[in-house]
Every structure is written in C-alpha cells, then in structure tokens.
Image (cartoon, rainbow, N blue to C red; front, top):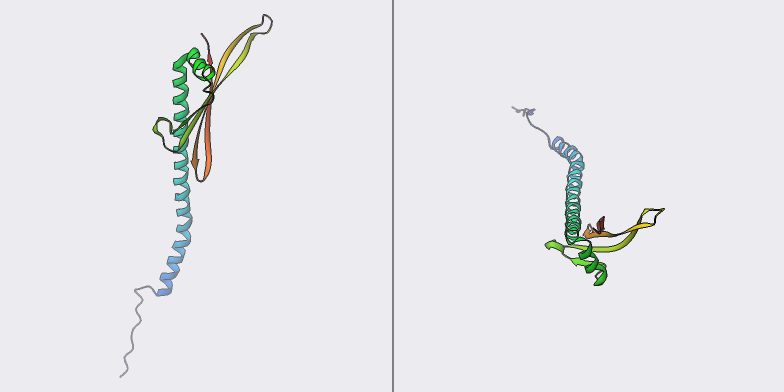
Length: 143
C-alpha cells in the first residue's frame, strides 16, 4: 500500500517568507532614513541653541560693562576683535567679539550726533565636516 502524504496548508512556504521579508525591508528602509535625518536635525538644532546662548551671554556681559568699559577694553587696549576658544567651557566652539564706533546723526539741521558702539558677537563650531556660525549684534549708547 502506498501512503499519500497530506500537504499541510497551515504554514508558510520559504518563498512566502522571503517575499514578506523583502516587502518589509522595502518599507522599513525609508523609515530608518527618516529617523536618521531626524536625529541629525535635532543635533543641529542643539548646536545652534548653544551658539545662540554663547552669543547672548557675551552680549549681556558686555552690556554690564557699560559704554566706557567696552570702549576701554576693546578700543583703547587693542583687544579688537577678541577671540575666545571653548567659551564658558563649551568644547568645540569659538567666539569672536568686536566693537566698532558708529556715528549717528540725531538731528540733520542742528548737527547733533551721538557715538554708539556696535557690538558684534560671532560663535563658530564644526558640524558634519563644515564650519557653522551664528552672529548677534547690538548697539551700546553712552549715557
């Protein structure tokens, strides 16, 4: 007597499994690329936030010196521009601050003028093998 083996229909064949894995791979690959791009964007935003913090911190520090203190340190003592490496303990960042006197004419007829200091602060860092920078400017008026 010949026994006939019944084919089981309860499982998957090897071809079906390979096809399912291929479809899963085609769908999952773009998703992984999106996650990678998202992580890169978060890292970039974090670097820009730290750079903005360093710019604002330096501007507030200079504002606390007042017009005379800034003028004395930068222009009279020839510290213009002033370069700092790893400012405030932030590794891989550099900060350059410079001061330029600017004359503003307040009344064109009477010839009144005011001399203000333009303070420029630029923070630079390296990201993805290229140099990035963020700048901030403000004006300080003598009182």
